[in-house]
Amino acid sequence: MTPNPLVVYETTNLEDAVRLLLETKYRRLPVVDNDGKLVGIVTRGDIVRASQLMKSSTERLT
Image 1 (cartoon, rainbow, N blue to C red):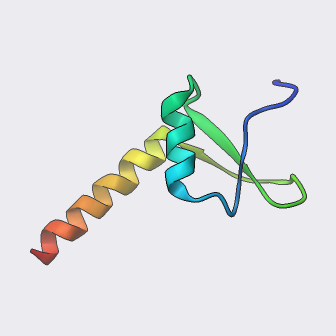
Image 2: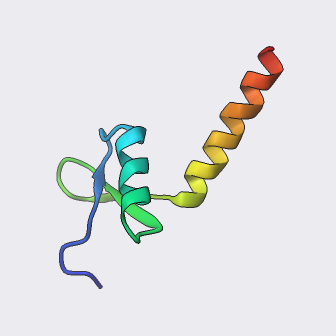
Image 3: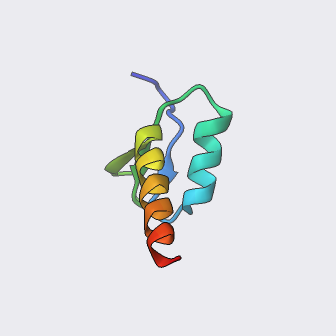
């Protein structure tokens, strides 16, 4: 286990989380609440899936 892992908070905006994933070697980031309790994980795969869904929904609108 990593002693001081890089984490994002529930309130971190998606753009900042994506930037961290792109600028580091990490493929996933733990998501913690204000007390530091783990509440989830965001992965590069999550970002790819979300962007594909957004693209698909915009294409349906045009």
